[in-house]
Each structure stands twice: as structure tokens, then as C-alpha cells.
Length: 297
Image (cartoon, helix red, strand yellow):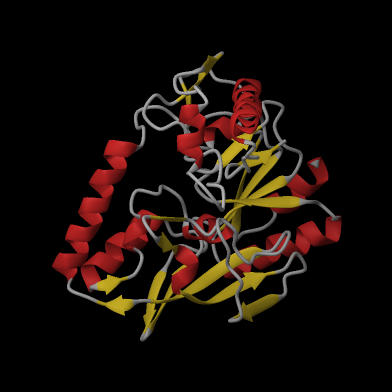
């Protein structure tokens, strides 16, 4: 790793940070060290990174805003790539809106609101990046980001650039293959009245604030909703887990599908609650809950 770090220091189109704690990079505020974080300044910088990592045979992960992650307190061994500087753009190519994967969802929605572009309002309040949202096909209130995507531009670990227009999205699952890096997404949106879009977004944002916990670190919904039957939050609530605490982690008293970090929660605390919930829900309802949060260990 030392040799790789020295190699990266020679690159002019990237910046690096060594030994960062993942708790500083995730909304859960949990997680140990990552050996190297690399932020390219441009598309050319990303290509440099991929070329070096591929040459050295070094595994990597891509991180967005870290809002759907639970990371082990021991940290991870892979190198992290962060695209929030390199791939942070919105470009109108009528009728397509080209958006960089490192762009925040809130910035994208604000842009759409100002330009009278509709179709993504249900994503308001989701604090992630466009790339992360695509990876998990984020959605709420009947909206899914995959419904409005016309194409993706991705890079393979070997640096090959591909544009894909045949895309298979499913519930909380995007079309990304292992180790691929999303660079750009093309959205096909609808024209609308900016005032009406603003009001719809405001209404959904208020609804989210009333029904989901704020004020403590979390990773959003822990479990996916089962394909048939009541949502995960309902099942967890009826199984008696609301307010259940383990160490510094607690099942939200407001929304049972959220686990909150009260300030000193560990990876073990959260995983312990996850296993308790899974066992309790299965015992009572014969339903196996599937994780929505991504686990890095």
C-alpha cells in the first residue's frame, strides 16, 4: 500500500487522504479506517486512478455521500474512490438532463424545481448522491430513480468507458455490475410548472419529516419492504422492537425500520439489533427481512 500511495502522490489530477475513519464518511457515523481515499478532479483523473489500481491489482470501492452504509469498526481493506469533485455537474441536452454521479440528490432536485422538470420529486429528503441512488434504485412515495433514467455512462475497472441504454432496474437494485463506476446518468424528465413542483416537493418533504426520525445519525431504512404483505417497519413494530436498545444503538421509536446511533454506537451494536429483529420478525410472521443498508466489513 505504501508504494501505491507514493505512486498516487505523483498524480496531479487527484488528491488523496490516508487512514481516514469511515465514521467520518458515513451518515451512520460508524466505521474504522480506510487505507486510502482518492478524489479525482476530473474524468481524466478517474482514468488515471483506474489505470494504476488495475496495474497494481488493488481492489477498490466507490463512495458517494455514505448514506446507506454500515461499516465495520475494524475498517475496510479496499481503496476508496470519491467522485464528488470530478463528476459533479448538471448539463441540459434537451430533452435529456445529463447529471454526474457525484452530484447530490438535493442539488439535482433543486435544479429540476427551478427549471420546471418533474419526475424525481419523491426523492426529496434522501441525502445521498446520484450514483448511490442509482446503485440502490432509491425511491419513495411511488417514485424510483430508475423510472426516469435513459442511459448510464460507466467505467469498468480496466478504464473502459461504456454507455448503456438497456437498463434493468428492480426494487432497491440498480443495473451496476461489480466494481463498475458510474460517471454520468441521462434523465428523461417531464415539463411542469415550477410552482407546482415546488409545492409537491415541499409536501413530500414535510411528510418525510413527520414520519421518519431526524436528529440522530442513521443509514435510512435498514430493511427492504417484503414483496408481499405489510412493510418492514410495520412488521418490526408489531414484533415489539420499537425503542429496543443495544449499546449505543436504538430502534427508532418513530419509525421501526430505522436504527439510530445515539452517539457511541458500534458496528456490533447495530448488527446485534439487526439479527434480533430478523429472528423476531421471522418467528412471528414467517417473513425473512432482506437488508437495504449496505454492509462493508
